[in-house]
Structures are given as C-alpha cells and as structure tokens.
View: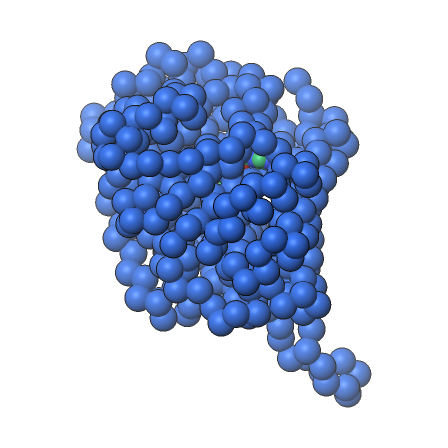
Length: 390
Ligand SMILES: NC(=O)c1ccc[n+]([C@@H]2O[C@H](COP(=O)([O-])OP(=O)(O)OC[C@H]3O[C@@H](n4cnc5c(N)ncnc54)[C@H](O)[C@@H]3O)[C@@H](O)[C@H]2O)c1
C-alpha cells in the first residue's frame, strides 16, 4: 500500500513509518517539526536525542534499506496539504499531526486556542483535501481514550448508541466528556469526522488510543533510529515520566489518590495494532471506531510496577504524592469495550511489568542529558489556574 503518515517525526509517527516500510509499504511522511519546538518552549527536550529528519531517513536506508519520502509542511496550510494529497494519491492516510499534550493545552488561553486550532483545522483540511483529490482512501485518525472521560457506564466501542429520552427513542453519538482542551479537540475532531462520513461518505478508522509507553519497536535497532521520548510534566505521559524519575532519583510523581484507571499499551503494541488497522480497512464509506489499549491500570499500580523494575536494577526509588493539578475523578468506574482489534487478530506482545526494566535501562545512558531538565518534572500546570506559563 501507499501510506501517507501525517506527523511522521513524532513519538508514534516515526516507529509506525519504520514498521510500514518493513512490511513492504511505500511511506510518505509529513511533518512541520512543531513538537520539537513546543517541547523546547516549556524548557524541556526529548530524553533520548533524535536526529534531524533527513538523517533519520538516511539511517533507515543505511541500516534497513528502507526508502522513505518526506514533505516538510504544516497541515493547517490547506494549499500544502492539498498538493501533497494530489501528488501522492495514497491508499491510506494516518493522521497523527496534532498537538498531543493535555497540560500544554491548559497552560493559558494562548495554548488552549493553539491546541484547538491546530488540531481541528488540520483535520478539516484533511477531510477537504481527501474529498478533492482522493475520496476513496482510508483515513486512519488518531483520537484518544481520553475523549470518553470516565463515565459511570461501560464505554461502548461504537460511534452511536441507542437512547430513550422522555419516552422517545433515537440514536445519538456516543457520549463523551473530555478532561482537557487537548482531549476536547479530539472530541471535536470525532464529531467532524462523523459528519464528513455521513455527508461525504469518506472512509475512516477513528482510534481511541490509551497512553503509550516505551522506547523501542523491533525496527529501532540503532541509536540513529530512536524515536523521541518526552518526560517533563507538560509533555511526558505517566509511565515514561515515572521511568525517567526513577533514573534521576526523583520520587515518582503520583497525582491525587493514584486510583485513576486508564488503558495503557506499549509502543510495540501500538505500532502492531495500527499496522493491522491500516492493512484491514473498513468497508468503503464506513466509519469504524477502535478502542486501543492493552491493560487497565491505576496510577498506583504503575508506580509500584516501575518501583519494582527499578529495584531489580539496583535503583531504589520512592513513591511521592502530589495534590492533583488536574480536575479528574479520583475513584471511578472504568470498563471500555474492546473488540475491533482482537477481531483483527491483535495479540499484545508486552505487558507493562515485562517492559519497564528494559525501558529504564534504555534511559540510563541519557541520565546526564535528562538531568538538565530536572526542574521541569514536578507538577506545575494546574487545571484550576488560567495562567501557568513559567
Ligand atoms: N503518545 C501517546 O501516548 C498518545 C496516546 C493517545 C493518542 N495519541 C495521539 O497520537 C498522535 C501522535 O502522538 P505522538 O505521541 O506521536 O505525538 P508527537 O507530538 O510526538 O507527534 C505528532 C507529530 O505531528 C506533528 N504536527 C503537529 N501539528 C502539525 C501540523 N499542523 N502540521 C504538520 N505536522 C504537525 C508534530 O511535529 C509531531 O512530530 C497525536 O494525535 C496524539 O494526540 C498519542
């Protein structure tokens, strides 16, 4: 297949590009490198240094013999995206090119509007450019499990649910209540995609993915092929942040009671699941939603897993408690349905307890680099404040 990966320079975009190339697909990457810039803006950096895109592409060629094409540009620029889609005419487009940090979106009004504008307008541009150049292609759009929030019902893996309101029955879109402007941008995207599917009959897979952790996939065999790895309080997701904290000797930053439960998966499993969804598209004109996670775990369980893995490596780390800077339920029901990926034969390769030791070991060589950003790890961005810029 010919696959365009929007956001190919990112944490997920780079390993997925390598996996698709390894599986014999033609891959065309697109990125404007804004994550590199935005992470630096908050005084942080990737824990694992990453080469420039041209050097990554050369390393992929030298090490694995892969030929990857790349277009630098911003997908909120319609002319640019339209030109790429017209030139490439892909079978599938993977859309990762969004700003992905909940705390970043909660810093202040400027960051909230940036996140909402970047994410929503990029998706709208994608819808229009696909309609005008290539309406039969499959769009694989990355959403998040965070769109659902933590409702007191079992989260269905479907676009619509049947309801009865004051005695009358109808189908409505699956209820969602996100927990940050970032997560709301994804809910708005989902609504826009559903509308595009209904009106324009475009084909979508909308993936509701849980937080991803890890440093490697099987193609990342050399440091020139590493993917980025964020760990500060704004850009680092919880497992990756805890592993860096254990290397730096910082008590693990558990927020609130630590009983918040989410669905997690490793980078290897994320890439495996995404490849399956790309290679097994829905029917033409269909909208398919896929929940994507492997294990439901509480923050306390994750902290204990990381603590035990560190201990096995001779690293003693304590578990710290912080007042929760986010507005989220401390204790809640959480039971999302997951049937699409298992139905395609998805079998997770890794559990968190199996991987955290290797993850910590992969970070140790970068201890000195990471320690330069030590003061960016403790929670700072507070949901209840309207100004969090440092
Ligand atoms: N990493 C996770 O745990 C996780 C979990 C659930 C969902 N997601 C979603 O998956 C996608 C990829 O996540 P990631 O962790 O790789 O994030 P990332 O920030 O590392 O990658 C996103 C890439 O898109 C690029 N980009 C952003 N806006 C762009 C624009 N307007 N034009 C061109 N390029 C643009 C960035 O420069 C970056 O390289 C995101 O949509 C994110 O919200 C990630």
